[in-house]
Image (cartoon, rainbow, N blue to C red; front, side, top):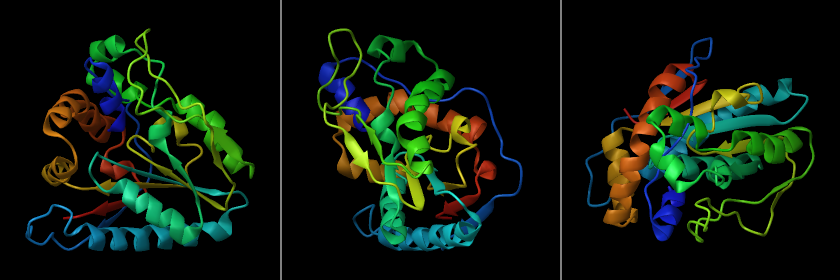
Length: 253
């Protein structure tokens, strides 16, 4: 979501990821959590309990797979905006001593604001993450047991004169580890499927996700974000990576 803040700071519209529908073979494991308790004033009230359950299930699945691996285990934690996936990913990485790779660092900064505005939801879903750079600069080195370094997307600078977006001058450096956690919407995209050992969907109802977002974002900014990216997320999680295509689904109800 932070990339639209950069777009709005520089002015202009926006958009998001993926093309070809792709469905994993095999049955996904769906983990149901008890129904959410009534809200008591803050949309994040039940998040801590949900995160703890999610982390336990993901760590359990990862530990089952690790003995079979001769190279690092890559976990992709995907989900819609406001689902709590980044909180889950950070906790999983801490629990497993994993290398954490934020997918937002690889937002497609080279695409102009005008070009985003012209894309339909399918194209936005296909293009929002520069998966080739993500693969080349972060995932492949880490999977080879080597350090990785990359320039993250610059969320603060806004639109450049040519309509594209910048990346921070400083490198992010990530040490290798036996587990790699890739966090972010579209992180389980099909172009990375040959690298991913465990694909996880943090599945939270749209209404609750939007409620959570409304507590932490300014309304005008959030309305613009929804207008640009909601359709792309819906397309991705319906046609590209539906829940049935994930290895593990962590759901609230």
